[in-house]
Length: 419
Image (cartoon, rainbow, N blue to C red; front, side, top):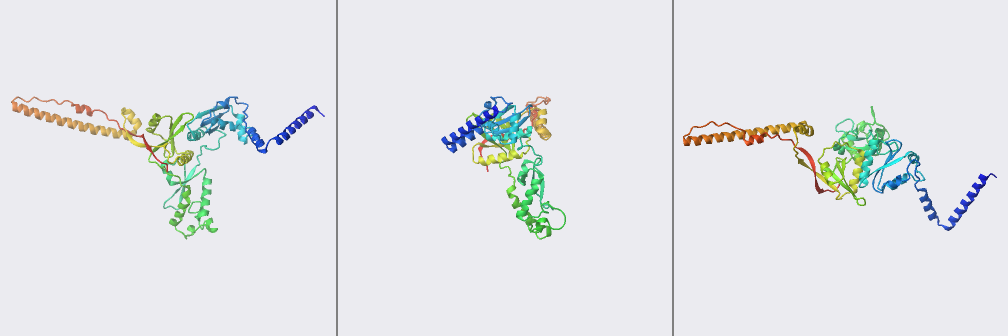
């Protein structure tokens, strides 16, 4: 017998004797727990330094796996970032993607946040900006769409892209679909369940009854047995479960998030379901609250914020930011650039009107003074000297150029309850 085979047989016998002894001395539950713990022990990738995982803080935030270049391979988040990172390198890699990430990762970066909400918002933004190859969720999707009811039209619904819809119109939309195919499949299921006409929904064309009417699942709009008003009332009731929620506040809000262990506090600013930014202090919040943003609607942010408002209903961490008039003095060029042509023209008109009033008042006072001087000279019998009109202080004041103000937000400590 070859020496290698004899050695292998001896090792197998030793292992078998060890297993027999463990089973005799330990209960099955203890053995199962020990095996589970051993299988979950982290096995660091060969390209990663031994101290890389230990350097990740046990705090909420977002972590980034990097390979050979600067672009991240994968972006994730966790309430405990170190534990979450270790789970990627468990000995029993849960999927082929986890094994591939473990082979490619060379460096780990992280960004701490004050809590889970900040981590969710940051993760969604970074994934859309960086497009990591191993992230499948939260990626930018230009095919996102929804339905809108059409009044007095041949077709009761129109499909609109969510990417370009104003956030103020979300309350008029139904559904949040990843593609046109998913939207139409959902609509077909609703039609079959509620007896709706496929032609009225725009899913079929041509003459004659729709397919649902042929299988007795349409109440006959396509053949004149039902009018559009009755059909569309049932359609609206069927779509109620898909209706997007309108913004429940009159303006901007801020959600305060605190990490008691790390001593970190952040304010997340929102308006019309859009995340406008995150402030690290109340001073930054005041400054950001008065700043104008061109934020676009993002479906992932909408979902994150809606869940957060439901979870924090009645919480004092939701602060309403009231809209107030804020006037600032600045140069004419700044007024034209920041306030825009409309406000600049309004400021010029206001300046001319004020200047005209000041000049008329100055002329009136000068005329009154000349008349008084003439009366005094007449009573004293002395000749009247001509009076030269000079710029009065009011006229000088009238020359001050007025600057148009701009509307902004100033935080007010008004607690609100999220509906």
